Amino acid sequence: MTSQTPAVSAAAASSPAPAREVATLGGGCFWCLEAVFDQLQGVEHVESGYSGGWVPNPTYKQVCTGNTGHAEVVQITFDPQQISYRELLEVFFAIHDPTTLNRQGADVGTQYRSVIFYHTPEQKAIAEETIRELNAARIWPNPIVTQVVPFEAFYMAEDYHQEYFVNNPYQPYCQVVIAPKVSKFRQKFAHRLKA
Image (cartoon, rainbow, N blue to C red):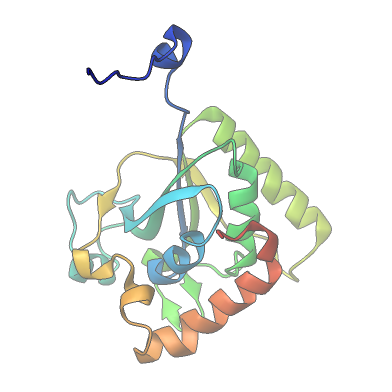
C-alpha cells in the first residue's frame, strides 16, 4: 500500500502570499505604542526601535541623550486586508497627544516626538489627509504637530525593550503609564482587538 500526497491545484501552488505592509510610527515611549499595536487584529508583528536620526545603529543610551536625532518608534507589519493604514493611524492618534512638541506626559525630548515615517507616497497622502481632518474636527485645543517624513532606516532596539509591557507588567512605569493607556485603548477599540 502506497501513501499518496494530496493533489494541489496549479492555481493554489502558484498564488503569491498575501501582501504585507509596514508602518513606522513614533508617539512617545515605544513601550506604550508596542503594547497597544500588538493587540490589533491584522497586526502581525511589532518591533520597538529608532528612526529619523543620523547615527547608525544607535543604542538606547545614545538615543536618550537626544543627540542622535532618532525618535523612539514602533515598526508594524500588518495585513492590509484586515486593517488599513488609515485605521492604524486612527489608533495612533487616539493613544497619544499629537499636539505637544517633543514630549508625551513626563517623557520630554526630541526622541519622544510625534512622527509618521511614511514608506510610500500613498502612506504620505493618507497621513496628511488624516491630520487635516483631525485638525478640522478640533478634537484637541491645539493643532497637531506630528511630523510626516520619509522613512529612511529603522534600527531595532535592544532585546529587553521588545515586548516590554508583556514581560514587565509590574514595573512602575508599566503600571502607572502603560496599563491605563492600554485599558483605554481596549475599551475604545474593542471591535478591533485580536481574539
